[in-house]
Length: 259
Ligand code: ADP
Image (cartoon, rainbow, N blue to C red; front, side, top):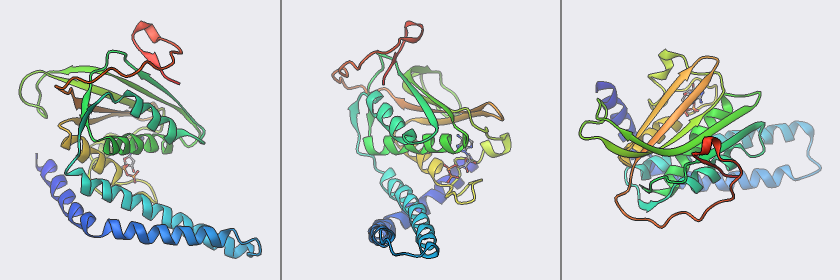
């Protein structure tokens, strides 16, 4: 509980900061990145100058990731939710996140999946953050497997009350894994093991899912990989079913693999 409180107060100060500067800073960055791109297209550049520009561009892209996380967080306190079927959004986000890399993905969506009340942009960012981490955990390539379905959870420590109905999105990688002493810190703001990491992706994701009334959990074992479970409460509203997607394979007769 104390850990939760520390995390919440760190995120609160982050939110104040974010609201104040992230938006303006993002506009400044867009101008800088645009001008660097123009300068790099000059064919008369020396090799040395081209390298400097490339480094400047990389630094800007990292700063942009940072502001993006800050912006999501500053909005994270106040999700604009609508009842929806989340399968197609998850599918598209995962595919986009691995595109052009040496990481493959498979996305399985249970056909009877319940609807949830979600802020699309925020959930997209959470899925994107988790898949990017998965990619980075597999520098030599591998597979990200995502499965979406329904889950009934019994009351527990982090969720008192009656049995509740959730939609579960599980994102599994075959990466390096997370040692137990890190696993308890991965959702802390600024915790990172990467030389140029921000340590904000999972902290922001955790806050977003909590603000949706859900849970974000991780399990990991060294050498085998990591799985993140996003749990979002079932919507009490009725939503029209998703139009059926092309069916490629039905694993064990219980799901649909979208391509
Ligand atoms: P960042 O990616 O900037 O470090 P995150 O909050 O997204 O920030 O992640 C925090 C830390 O959690 C990472 O630095 C890494 O040590 C660990 N981590 C997160 N996802 C994974 C994963 N799929 N495999 C291994 N380690 C992970």
